Image 1 (cartoon, rainbow, N blue to C red):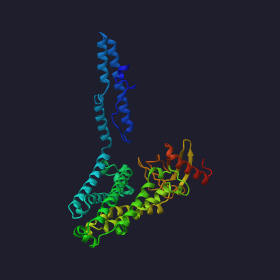
Image 2: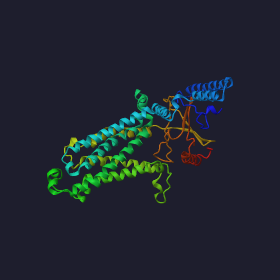
Image 3: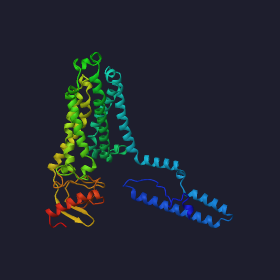
Image 4: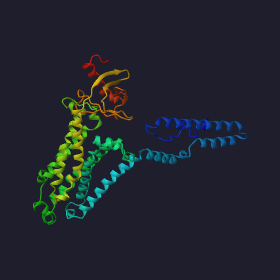
Amino acid sequence: MEELDPDARGYIEVPRNENFSSSDAAPACLHICSSSVLMQIWQLEKLLRKMVMEEGSQDQMDQASTSLAKTMVPSSHRSPMQKQIHETVDFIHENWKRIWFLTLWGIANIALFIFKFIQYRNRAVFEVMGYCVCIAKGAAETTKLNMALILLPVCRNTLTALRSTALSAVIPFDDNINFHKVIAVGIAIGAGMHTVVHLTCDFPRLVSCPSDKFQEKLGPFFNYVQPTWGTLLASTPGWTGILLVLIMSFSFTLATHSFRRSVVKLPSPFHHLAGFNSFWYAHHLLVFAYILLVMHSYYLFLTKPWYKKTGWMYIAVPVIFYASERATRRVREKNYGVTVIKAAIYPGNVLSLYMKKPSSFKYKSGMYLFVKCPDVSPFEWYHPIIHIFQVTSFPRLWLQNFLQCLQASLLHHLCTWGRLLECTYPHIR
């Protein structure tokens, strides 16, 4: 039977034909699995018949076996290069929405960087600060774009409405949090590049520039007074930029998985800096970051006309969208209540809630819930992508099975909720 494994890998490789969405996974998987089994049986039968009926020398037998072994391997996997190409095609087919959307985002960032780079390359300031100012301004332009875009993936109500439109066929709305994180990385890169280039290249060249050259090229922008390190850092662009970097660094650090999920155990009195509540508070410091961004991009040294100060133009619409979303959530949270009829903890670390069904509610396949327990966290809504949720519709009740501990990282939340329920409602077991 070694002919079934011509590459001596120790196993028979069955190619993976295709991935399926949850809606058609069961029938499609059954069909593919049945076809795969039948194909393997047919190949095995063909091999055995050939070996029994073959007459001749050992060389002929070996040649026949080799020929049959090749038929067992798909043509797309005959060589490492063919296999790599086949796997790449499969990857693109499965992730094409993510790929084209991230490509579009990358092209937008590159285009803005190049646009600003060329713009400052052709200005008089280039003769003093060189390519440093071009790089710094290009990075700043991408940061403004990403500071605007990062709010859109967390506009939950808007995304929920868009998922039911034709746009969902080409835009990966379900990857909104992942895209939010990718944009955050883009902001970190752009802001870091902007800050480092200014401090290590632009400012030193500006301060040490010969007075005659400075007055000729940059005098009108600085009221004909050459700045020092102190005046640059104490200026509005200087101190707002420093505060921006500090707030972003603090917020982004507490947003990492290790801090958000309390994986990092800090010593007292800093242990309160880890956990979702700290992440929530730190993220809301970014409100001040947006205010500082508007100030930083408005009070510029090298740009005077107001219509060329574009920072506020980038973020105006996304901020309005996000503020409307938060206001809507707040109104719903205050005006709509949920009546919990029963709660129980079942074997297998399954926490079950029975809630009274609102009269206007109609259950549809694929619906999910966001659940918040104020005693655990007054801010955290448990996301169905992170925790396993199942909603079952009954004539009078919803059955909400959730927080099934399938991953070690969920055990903390399950145990916390379970202890709180047992303490508050002793009859729950």
